[in-house]
Length: 173
Length: 98
Image (cartoon, rainbow over all chains, first blue to last red; front, side):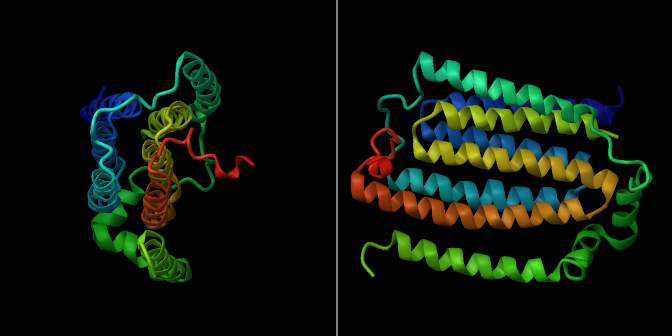
């Protein structure tokens, strides 16, 4: 097992363990912090999978901005204090395990997934592109070229959600 | 190439997200489980980008933007619900039940 593969499984193991803790902790604050741990491990996995720029975005946007928003709302609503557990009883646990287990078994087929050989890039092509063009430029160039229209639509979406969030959260307009 | 292992981990994380949504009653925790599922899909995109080109990474960028917008609006809705009903437990939020 090469060091990269060993590192991959280490980070993957921590990510799955933190995700498991995230869905089983009673306190929403503890859940949010374990989710932050999972997001950091995913950023590490992104680096191993040659997506360094996306990994930085993951830490900045997900673990930074979005999770701070979650913690802020938990704090604002004073949900951190100990109270009755919101985890469902044995019946709910059985149903959740059954449904999620069936879906997980179906997703196991993915392990054998292989993209068709005629569209697959040679190994290391992505890493080579980011080394010749630069880490950010390799992602940014197609983003502002082939994907310019979706990019602009995203900016409109963010504006709409900004206005929507303010309108919804305001006490009185 | 780590495509198979990455897809395995992503499937596992997605399953845990689904289990969390089915297991919890607190709306904010359910929302966090949805974020976990989005991240599992992001891992799939990044893993496949290694074999199929940089477009996968660009889709992760878009997923992140949509997730940020969704988190802002969703949490604002939860603030409004909490102000209205004083709880975020989904058992007590049954306005649409008729």
